[in-house]
Length: 242
Figure 1 (cartoon, rainbow, N blue to C red):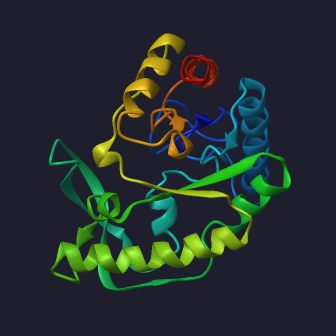
Figure 2 (figure 1 turned 30 degrees about the horizontal axis):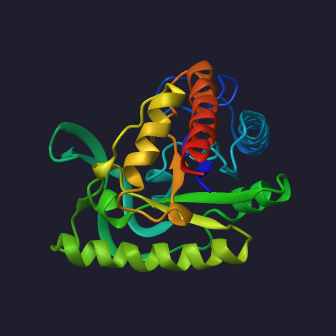
C-alpha cells in the first residue's frame, strides 16, 4: 500500500553534465558519454533503494531533457532550425524544434536505459515518457496545421515505445504531463497528509506516492532529502490508514 517512486528526473552528477540546468551540456562524448550515463544511472538506482523507495526509475540520466530525449529518435523533426515559441501556457519563451514532416520512429528509443534498469534492481521499475500534450507544447508545428492531429500522431509513437518498454520488463510506464504538475511538499508529515487527501478520490491500491517532477536542476543533497522524506511520509501514511 502506498508504493513510492520518483516522478522522473534526478540531478545529473557534475562528471556527467552541467548541474542545476534543465537542458545541461554533456561532459563527454561517444563511448565515454555512454559509460558515464550508465554509471550515473547505477548510482541513482542504489540511492533510491537506500532511501527506501518501492519503485525504481532511471532518473533520466541518459536524457538531456525528457521531451527532447524522446524527440531525438523521431523522424520529421528539425532540430537544426529552432524557432522561439511561448510554452506552458505562454508563461515563458523557449527555442524549440519544428515538426516539418510526418512523424515516424527511427527505431527503439529507450531500450538501453530500460534494460540497464531492469538488470540492476529486483524491485519494480518505472519509466517516464513525455505525454502528447507536453510534447506539442514543446515543439513548433510547421507540418500538421492542427495541434490535435499532431498530438495524436505523437500518441501513436508513444504507444509503440510503451509496448516495447513493457517487453523490456518495465512494470510501470508514466506518461508525464508537466503542464498539470502539482509539486509535493518535502517534510514527511505533509507527504502523509497529501496522501490522505488523495485517498478521497483514489483507491489505496491505485495510489503511488511520488516526488515532484523536475528534480534534475536541484542539488543532489536536496534530491536525496526528498527521496527520504517521500519514503518516510508514505510509511507514516501506511500507519495512519492501516
